[in-house]
Each structure stands twice: as C-alpha cells, then as structure tokens.
Length: 370
Ligand SMILES: [Fe+2]
Image (cartoon, rainbow, N blue to C red; front, top):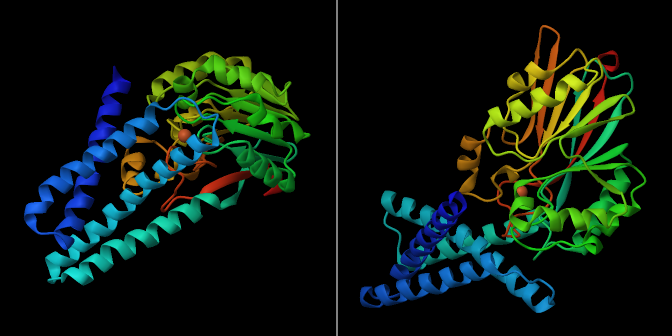
C-alpha cells in the first residue's frame, strides 16, 4: 500500500513540475487561449512517458536502453527547467522581465544545468576519508561502493569502469552497501562479472531496490560471480582483525536496525574494531555509539544519493539522520562514526545536480597512528 502511495505522490510531483515548466514557457511564447490545450496535452504526454519508464521490465534490447536513457534525461531536463523557471519567476517579481529575456533565462539556465547534470553524473570522484578506531592494530583501506543502480541505463560497461578505478586504488577490501539493481530491472551475473577481477574480498548487503527488483533474482546474479561477491545477510566475518558486520536493509526507522544490532553485536569481540554495513544511514553516530565496544565502530551506508538532483536535497536531508560524508562521535572512550556515500550510479535519471558520484576510499587506522 505504501509503495502505491509513494508512486502516486511521485507522479503528482512530476505532473506538477511539468505543469509549472510548461506554464512558464508557454506564457512566454503563446497567447493565453493556446495555453490551456498545450499545457494539458504536454502534461499528459509526459505522464505517459513516466509511467512507461517505471513499468518497463525488459532491458535486453539496445533500442529500449536508448529509449529509457532518453526518458531519464527528459525527466532530469524538466527538473532543471523547473529551477530556471523558478528563477525567472523570482526575477520577474523583483523587476519586469521581457519575453525574450525571460525565454533566455529559462532555456539558457535550464540547458546549462542539464549539461552540467549529465557530465557530473558521468564523472566519478574518489572521496578519501580517514577514520580512527582505537581497536585497529593495523590500517585497513576499504573501497566503498554504494547504489550502483544497474539495469536499464547502467550496465556491464559501467561496472567495468568502476571496477577499473577500484583496482587502481589498491584497497584491502571492497564493500557494496546495497541498491545493486535499479527499480524493477533485472541484473545478471554477466553484469557483475567485472568484480571477479578483484583479488580482494567484496562484501555486499541488500538495499531497498533489491526488494523492488526481487531479492532471489539479485542473489542469483550475485551467486554467478562464484563467490567474488559475498552477501553478508545479518551475519559477520572477521577480516584482518576487523569485525565486518552486514545487515539486511531495514527502512528509515532506526529502532528496527537497533533491535537487529542488539541481536548481532553480543556475538562479536568488540575489543576489535567493527565495520558495520547497512544500506540506510538511519542512526546518528551518537546512537551507534551505544553498540561500540572499546574497539570502536564505523557504519558504512548509502541510500541518500546526496539528494541526486535538486529539488530533492532538502527532502532527503530532512528524512535521513545522516545525509552525506563522515559523521563522528567521540566521548568517554566511545568512538563511533557513520560514513554516507552519495552513491556511484544514479536512480532512474542519469543526472546529478549538486551531488557527486563517488567511490569512497576509507582508511581505518588505530589511535596510535594519529
Ligand atoms: Fe539508491
């Protein structure tokens, strides 16, 4: 029920944004009598396209990939035009703006944001972070990938590019914190095969998109890597003196995750440093500190995409305990940290405006190395 409400709200927001953009553009171009028909027609057409992308299932043909990419770019373009339209309306309130100047602002700023969003999403940066945990007897370099969103747009060539970058970084291990698939699109073992080229362990936990795509389908694709990717499903392992804990996706309600932590942590030697993998950053470092032993604890998460595109940043910031980057808490021998990746891929729309595509390179050191 909740997902249908979310879907309906999403479509209403998209319809509203389309209407706002067309209303701004058409009042700058047409006479008022043409406005109504054009506005309704365009909104209905765009709504139909949106339904198409959300319900399309098969991604096997390159034609469909191009179609879905174009649709994603269109939705991103409309979001950019909404910002340039809002800028125009704001300026028009302060000082009268003529039609040619108005069109230049709306189309010029909208086009610039669109191009920036496409290039920005395609350029993945390495975010280097150092975290000190008292129990670490030696340093550990972790490549953190989150939110690849493979499927309609991002496919094997994208995975190859990311894995190549990871290999150049020379990590001790790689972690994947969920959202391997995008929406209800299938992923395959062939898409994930580049991970087999890594000579270090790859630990993986589920995200919310795995539930949409179908967890058995995703795990079947993961199993075809022949163990190159290891799914940690509410379990832990010990790697080079670090506890690596992987917990299944639970939603934004922190108490659910806290209950799961309460079940898992007692089995660990918490004099060792603990790396917790969970898709949603639904605990603050202070809350996480309740589970830190003397070894300290670091949670690696994703999910937020850093908002991915304006205007979603404020909404995502308000609804997540941690939004992006590193959050730390140190008090009375408690060392707890939450690092939130803004993700490598992009959901639905292959664009990012004011958020970056990142590979996190987390170096965990002991206090003696400060
Ligand atoms: Fe995601």
